[in-house]
Amino acid sequence: MKVLILGGSGFVGSHLTRRLGREGHEVTVATRYAPGCKHLWVVPQATIRQFDPFDAERLVEELRGHDVAINLVGILNERGFGGAGFRRVHVDLVERIIEGCDEAGVPRLIQMSGLNAGRGESHYLRTRGEGEAAVRAADRDGRVSGTILQASTIFGEDDSFLNRFASLLRISPVLPLARPQAKFAPVFIDDVVEAFMRVLADDETAGRTYELCGSEQWTLAGLVRWLRDQLDLRRAVIGLPDVLGRLQGAAFDFVPGKPFSSDNYKSLKIDSVCRNDGFAELGIRPWGLAERAPAWLQPVDKQARYQKFRRQARRERN
Ligand SMILES: NC(=O)c1ccc[n+]([C@@H]2O[C@H](COP(=O)([O-])OP(=O)(O)OC[C@H]3O[C@@H](n4cnc5c(N)ncnc54)[C@H](OP(=O)(O)O)[C@@H]3O)[C@@H](O)[C@H]2O)c1
Image (tube, rainbow, N blue to C red; front, side, top):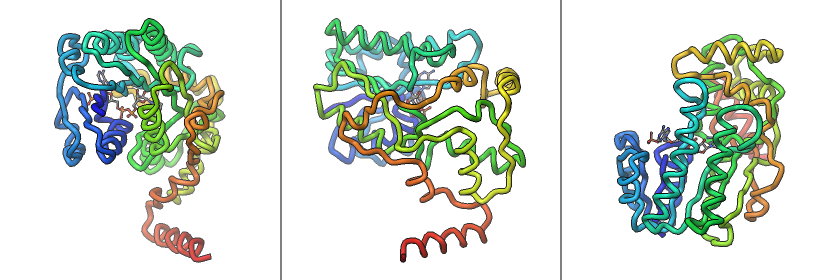
């Protein structure tokens, strides 16, 4: 199968490209910056193509000859305020990809979205919902067969979720958290990739939406405290009352790179847990965070790391 992945340079795209390559598929990784894809040069079946996906003509040219387009482009924060940045990436680009598939004769599109798309008051979720609506309409009109995957937070050794909290825990003695009781069902990257593979292998998944959640539910505070303990760090993780959480979001709106934002705060008001079991529908039994992540989360201190290895070895012997 010839697959073109938009946003293929990122976390999910890199894992998916390797897996598709291993299984003999030809993968085109579309990126705005080819040198950022050096880690994928070793995948012999992968071709890296640098272009601006908003350039409609070029997009059609690049899509031509592929059997499937996968859209992984997404942002958690926009540069400005007001939602225009989210709309451009999550709605306008999706519409261009649909038009591009239609014109280039690409019959299938898999759209990666987020859980709770279309719900709540954040620009992130609202625009995600609009992007999904465009894919469903295109599927109904017969322009392209569309499948949507909605995932809770995805974890893996090279993710940005656990790694970001791990970095914060390493540098800060106190970690104040907005929406500490917000719930997640972190989903393992290999399970997400497996979901893509099953969707690709089954045309009957066209027109469907699959919610993807890991087997464990966590609160944000519980998860960060567990991470702290895995790293063997002595840090205070403090749940902020709602009014302070909202203020934290507003303050971080002005920090370069927006590590957190008012929009993130609003997204956290809805628990990121599944209402339907998409993995079960696809015949996959997903892992939980505590089952997988300890394999690579190592204490910062050498002595503690050694003790953790010993404890693990003892458990494996028994
Ligand atoms: N990771 C998670 O926990 C999670 C959970 C639920 C849903 N998702 C969704 O799954 C998708 C993949 O996630 P990920 O973690 O792999 O994300 P990622 O690592 O940030 O990769 C996303 C890719 O999108 C491209 N991109 C970003 N902004 C863009 C823009 N303005 N215009 C064009 N391309 C742009 C980038 O590619 P180039 O810079 O190479 O062009 C980037 O590599 C995203 O849509 C994300 O929202 C992720």
